[in-house]
Image 1: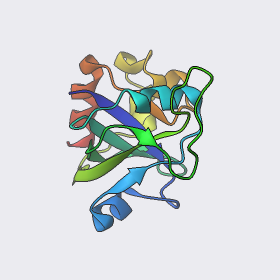
Image 2 (image 1 turned 30 degrees about the horizontal axis):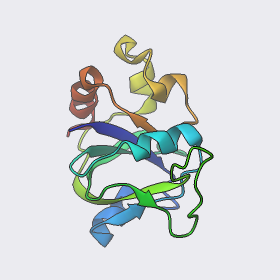
Image 3 (image 1 turned 90 degrees about the vertical axis):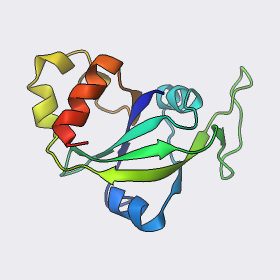
Length: 141
């Protein structure tokens, strides 16, 4: 099982919205690197849901429930034949009880090379196993 961090603007779709809906299609990602990460997701992988904007914190934990598939709204493929805009189905697991804020992550030297710090515009990123446990502890997950 892998863990990924997925960013969302809470005014567009928040972790509370995911809980209310019981699941959703994780879509709307345009960045090629973020889409590479989505293509690597498998059912059972877990997602740290991170709110951008004024919150800048991990708000909950979700689970991937499907293999990646083409976004029905954008079914294009890349020059290599890959799905250009992959999506996955996800479901909520639980809300965060701690304060895993961007400021806390940036102030902790363990995260100096983590993509949340080094590539701040990236919306989907893998969480290295050595950082996964630390982030979950910070977030109360």
